[in-house]
Amino acid sequence: MISPQAWSDAQLLWDFQQMHHEPRPCSVGIGLGSHDLGVAEVTADLYQRGMFPLIVFTGATSRTTRDRMPRGEAEHYRERAIELGVPASAVLVEPKAQNTGENIRFSRALLAEQGVGVSSILLVSKPYEERRAYATARKLWPDVEIVSASAPMTLAEYVDSIGDARLVLDMLVGAQQRLLIYPEQGFMISQQVPEAVTAAYDRLRAEGFTSRLAATP
Image (cartoon, rainbow, N blue to C red; front, side, top):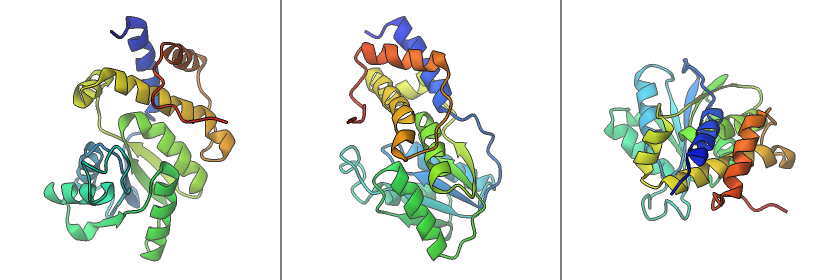
């Protein structure tokens, strides 16, 4: 049973981890690979709304996705976008990235190789990964404008879609931890974290929502 306090704390993390950007036209859309095909669906919708002329889907496989997406996350994303009406000619696939930093670096290299000029990126991720993706892109690709996007879902809707409330809270805590520790490791820019969010994170950790924490020295 998850306590009312834990739900309240999770809501604080959920709200903070989204950037609340308004989608606007960009040079390219980049969909970050994961277990969530919803990222591909959001990217396809943004393409069809005229937000960018070209998509890069980036991602290999992980222990979470190798069975569900045996051809690789980026390739499964591409197939889903084409099913939704995106022309194959508008999609590039980056099949090797295994973390957010590699998603950004390898996508940047692929676009340069293809001769695509990039001044702005509409970066599509899972809802609770928006801020991490934004901070990583700002660190690794500082000369372009970054606009964040994800499926427009509430925390309750996301929990329903995953079907495992405890796992979702674990993932929220893991995402928040990375926002706190990764700037010191050079993986992303530092961002100011409100005291209320840090307190919520500390309470959730104390309650045992820790299965998605990164190892620390």
